[in-house]
Image (cartoon, one colour):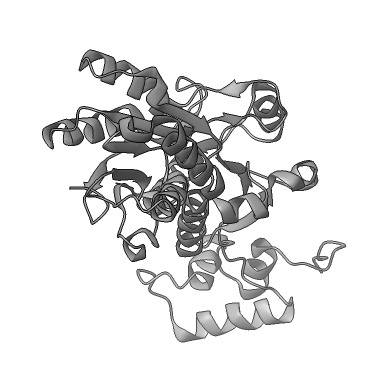
Length: 337
C-alpha cells in the first residue's frame, strides 16, 4: 500500500492512484474544469479519494495588498493650525480606503516608530531634510512626496506650481489697477533644523513684481504660516505704512489671510474698499469668513489621492520617477475686487 507523506497531506498523485485515473484528470475535476468530460462515477471516486485523504484543494491566495505608511512632517497640533496639510492627509486616507490599503499614520513626533513597521511603501506629506529622506530610503524605495519634490529624477511627487499661482494673483491685481501690492507670507524650516526652506511664493512675488516695475521692499512681510502671524504682520504693516499702506496684499496661505482680515477689521480699514486680500489654498472655511476670502483653489484632496495612485503604480512595476503638477483656480469673493 502506498504511504502518504509523513505530514499526512496527500498529493494529487496519491488521489489519482486511489481513484484509478490520471493526475491530469484529478486536477481538472478538483478545479471544476468546464471542458472536461468524465462520468459522474469517475468524479465520485476522485471526490471520495480526496475526502479519504482529507485533501483540501489548494486555492490561490488572495494577493496581500502592500502595507504603507503616511509620514506627516507636522505634529497633530501643528496640523490643526494649517488645514492645508490636513486636507491632503484626508485625501490620502480616502483613496487608501477605496483601494483597501492598510495605512499606518505617523506624525513627525512619532518618527521613531517608522523602523518598527513592515512597510512596503511611503507617502511623505510636507518637507523633509536630506537626513530624513536618507532614513526613509532605508525603509522602502517606494516613496511619494506630497507638496515637495526633493529630487524629481528619483522620487515621485505631487506638487502645485506656486510660482504660477503667484503670477496669476499679481496679474489679476494689476488688471484691477492696483499699483501698490504687498506680500505677507511665511517661511519654514526643516524639522531637524538643518536649514530654512525657500518659499516659492515669496521668491516668485519678488521676481514677478520687479518685472512689472512695481517692487517695493518695504511692502514685504514674512513670519510663520499661521493665523497669528498673519494678524501680527498686517498690524505691523498698518503701523509702518499708514497712508502708504498697499491697496492689495497677496497672502501666502488662507490661515495668514484670516489673521490679516482680523487686523484690518480691528483697525477699521475696509476690505475690499481700501485693501484687497487674496490668499492661497481655498480652505473649506474661506467662503464663510466675513468678508468671504478671495483665494487660489489648491486641490489638496486630489493631491492626496494622486499620491496613493502613484504609489500603486510603483507596486505594479513602474520604476521611472513621475512628478505630477496639479492645476489651481483663482476664486474671487468679497475680500477683493
